[in-house]
Image (tube, rainbow, N blue to C red; front, top):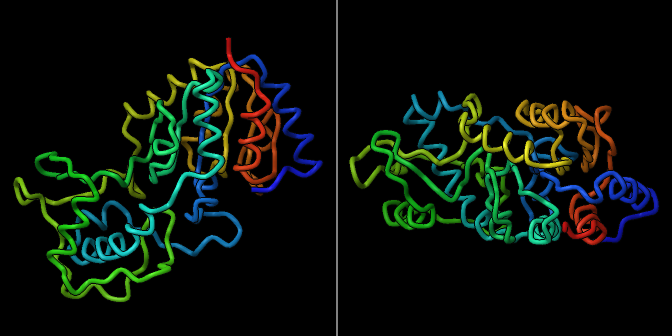
Length: 280
């Protein structure tokens, strides 16, 4: 992690002035995890993606087979990713009483592993899989062992090119045995929000409540293309709360931010955690 340059340091100073003495909510996107080796969706150099929709997954055995092969091939490397300085900085802000918690669009679980206690995972988590028929929940690590036992031919290549959701594009899925629920034989689905699927209403309400209980909002590593992020930003703006956006490149809401910092999230979040006074 590098030290902020002069322009970034000046922007961080303005952000500290705007946020000092306030309890803040934090919204994070894929850009927070790039320093952990997980690529983002839309940043410079991001891989071209054709994400599977929920309708494709639910309606097609061929699509599900392709999904599970790619997801398994990427799982080991995805699960081995470690929290970076940005994740740890946000955990420090919560422990010091400055941050009320983290709302994340990521499914990698790195905020939890970094030590954040209140984490609202808007898009779910890759840590769990559930049965769409009976609702039984399974740990993804246990499922990975089952997949390899039922498909002994499958190999996980080294240096696999990951996607943001921990999957890869498989060369072939022929012959792959799709994992089923061991309770009822039903269809298994990762506990994540697929493209074309809505964020659960109760999960968004939890995020709204966290923003409502705060006196400022920091948005880090999100281009705010997903409408849920814009909706939370507008909740903060209606209450005239300061909004700080940290992101490399433009976002949909730069003009609405109190301070926009065009820099890496790890360095800036660490600088904010070091500079913001502990809440009384």
